[in-house]
Amino acid sequence: MSSILRALPRTAAIVALGVSTSAFAQSQLQTQITPQMRSEARATMQACRADYESLCSNVAPGGGRILACLQSHAGQLTSVCARALPRAQALRDSAVTTGAAPK
Image (spheres, rainbow, N blue to C red):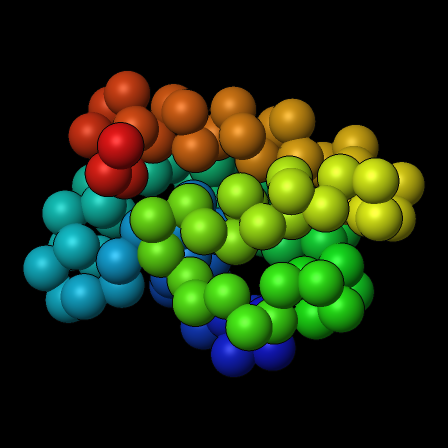
């Protein structure tokens, strides 16, 4: 996740939501992802950093794979990350609904 954190702030929401970070995708998504979504995505990334590194570091970002990996390890997550995941899922669902992320 350290590579993801280095990409902040420009792509924080894009990566946290599991969306491709191609130049085209970034330009399209930045118009649909609100500052609040970016902020919430950053908070989720910070809350789940240690969990990602210990449980899902082999998972490539994109398509919601990191979120799915963290959810699959629900019983092993820190309490901070476990509390952040429902909001992360809601952000992803919202991004899918608005077309900012693939289904």
